Amino acid sequence: MESVGRENEDFVLFPHDADVGVRGYGRVPAEAFANAARAMTAAITPLGRIAPSEAVEVSCSAPDMEVLFVDWLNAVIFEMATRRMLFSAFDLSIEDAELRGTLSGEAVDVRRHAPSVEPKGATFTGLSVKRDSDGRWVAECIVDV
Image 1 (cartoon, rainbow, N blue to C red):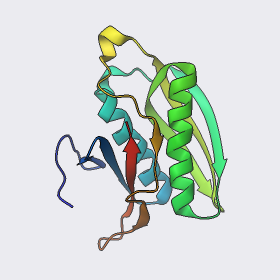
Image 2: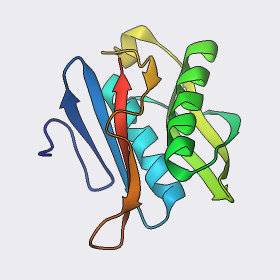
Image 3: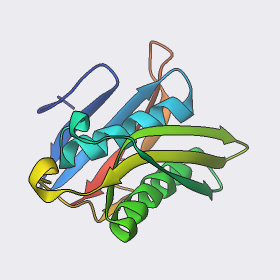
């Protein structure tokens, strides 16, 4: 699938009908998951507009890495919605299909952040967590916006 839109070396946003695809890359799954969360946030507002001034702890577990990835993104979306925050930094670890992480961000300031979309949920559409031919981990799925 060809990437379109904003991208950098750690993540890619790609179009999908009325939704958005997120893809994160990393040396280990946790890094790919963190970069996919950064991609999801970048679909809302440029990451540089979000000060990582407040930390929020999250955890989730799942039977496999793909379900864990969806659960992770949905945990981030839940924290965004319930705390009315945006996050720009993600520090996490994964051990035995259990994820523990810290989201760092700030309260939404509509004027400064100018959010362009609101993520509603990560889906199983296009879901994949695997190593690519270069040995990097790639985690991707479609996010309903």
